[in-house]
Length: 299
Image 1 (cartoon, rainbow, N blue to C red):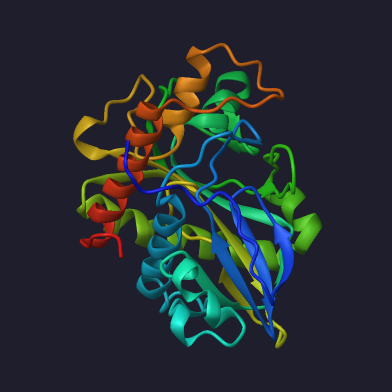
Image 2: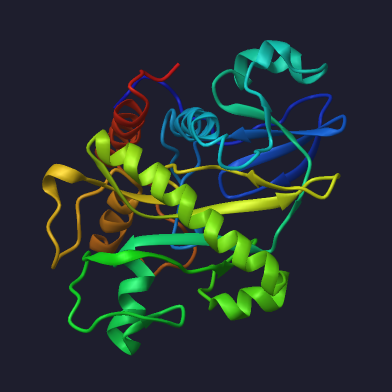
């Protein structure tokens, strides 16, 4: 077990807490927001009783990498990750915030998640087995679990503050945010996915699927927000171990889900804690994904 202690919750004196999500604590800093990624980990819609040391740093620093890598495709909300340059009073918490926080523009988040799938897995695989479709999109017959799709597909979902997101069709998403806007978001999502997946594949990682979130800025522009192509928002598979027809080994929290399935948890409170070996292995998976994609060690 690593000596580093996970950061489970923050309480930053002098700052107003806006929201505490499953992983992130969000504070108001003047006209901006400060997003702090803790080491909490959730599975089956519950935050577990154990944290994964450095997980929040991986999510933050990997998102920052992707914001820069994809900035020519779409504007984003990131202003700074330099905790020592944040406005007061955030700056006085620089030691805690270093490496795991982002100062971002405020936006009005769109109430849909924009999901791209290049492979048949998870809820998409379950729906395909039942209907031959995923979010209303017809797919060829006879596809296997984890099969690469003929082309990536756009499969939006509702956004749930608590509980599980629900897959919806593009038409249903269009009824929520507008038909013209959802068509634009579909094309943008698939472009971002293709760019990100190509880079990851060059580093030995398959991005089976991922979700993007977008917000509307004060000036009315649509921009990329939240996290981008992380092990929390994506399925990352090692390319050298890929084979269709079965579940895949992964760099994401599927490792934790698999453990929870083996212990017979009924997926209701009380939530279990994770044993030390599962925490340590999960931490290493997150760190390995970061090193492979960025070519750098975690700061």
